[in-house]
Image (cartoon, helix red, strand yellow):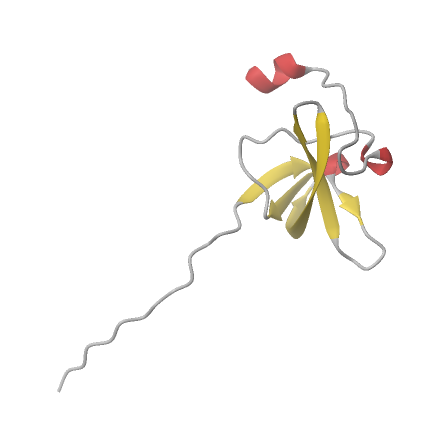
Length: 92
C-alpha cells in the first residue's frame, strides 16, 4: 500500500539578519524596531527578535544589505534626518 501527498510549506518572507544590540529599540509593549537608513532619512521597521548572542541580535523582518542606525536610535523617528558616519566600515 502506498500514498502520495503534497505538503505546501509557507515561504519565509521575513529575512533574518544579525544586528548589533545598539540598533534595537525596545517598545513598552514588548515589541522591537530598528531604523533603516535611506537617502539620509530614518525609516522605522518593526522586527521580531529571534535570539541574542552577546552584543548581537538575530532579528526577523529585516533585510540583509540594508543600512541600519546603530546609535542614537532612542532619538530617531520616521523621516528623521540622519548623518551616516563610519561608512568605510560598511564597505570592508
